[in-house]
Length: 178
Image (cartoon, rainbow, N blue to C red; front, side, top):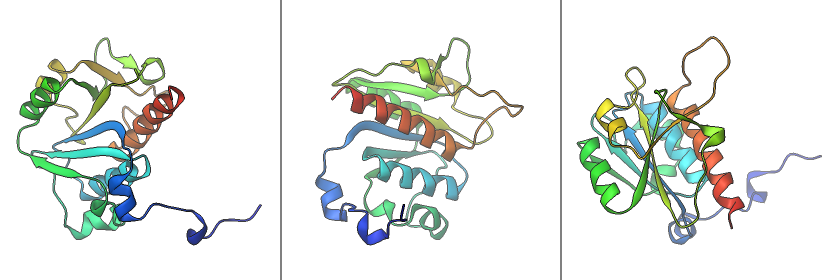
């Protein structure tokens, strides 16, 4: 087995990415502090053709050298927008028939492995602040709360890791419906 060179990976150009059919997933970052986490979310979103990222509240926006460091150019491919108030965005997306899923540890949350996706539905995945998590008013207005099962001693995963786990899971489930 031979490791592939970057030139052999057959990746999309920026122009091709922008016109490619997107995965019906929107990422909502609710007051994320770490610029490296934001960049990592961009990179994951590029990898799975996420439709758009909303950067809410204190979440920093490109261009910024610390976002760029982990995003590796994906801020040029993935559509994004800054929105001051997360709950206003959630209400707007709900009015557009987007299913709002907060990624959080909460009472009666659905474990990620038990969460089922539906064809022809668009999902907004809300990831919260590194310390406080997703705001309670956003959870209250969500259609679902999804929890990543964890079995060790720690109480949470890094937000960029959580995003990678959840986006991959939903992407794989959506692909299986095709």
